[in-house]
Length: 166
Image (cartoon, rainbow, N blue to C red; front, side, top):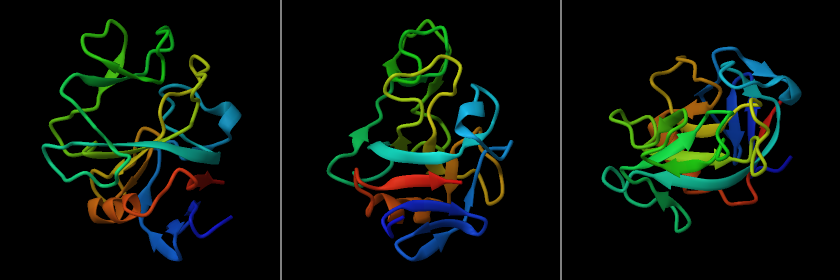
């Protein structure tokens, strides 16, 4: 592992020789081959960083490669959808999650390559890095941080950064 990797430890996520408190999925960490849609688990494995999204109406662009979240942007989480585990636009006739939320949870989203780009239906949709609701409050499987810590991380990650979950 490199200091540029985001490594989940019992104390939090280690990155650039710092440790950041985080929250994980409500069901804890599961082996990657056991991950299923809706199980609330964070999948173990080495996950590449493949993108970053942000709300331009709420924050400045965090990196030159971050993409804005628009009013119609959604994430497909329906295993029946041919666009399962991809960003889609409204209107969308399958199950999905709004990326432009009323709350600030997805104001900044770092995308991993979990079950991407060739998604296997039902194996679980996106594992994001995003802000937490509050310290200790679990996610649906993502890795969540204090907003200031997430922004600090966002300014320093690259496409070579990996999320390592054991």
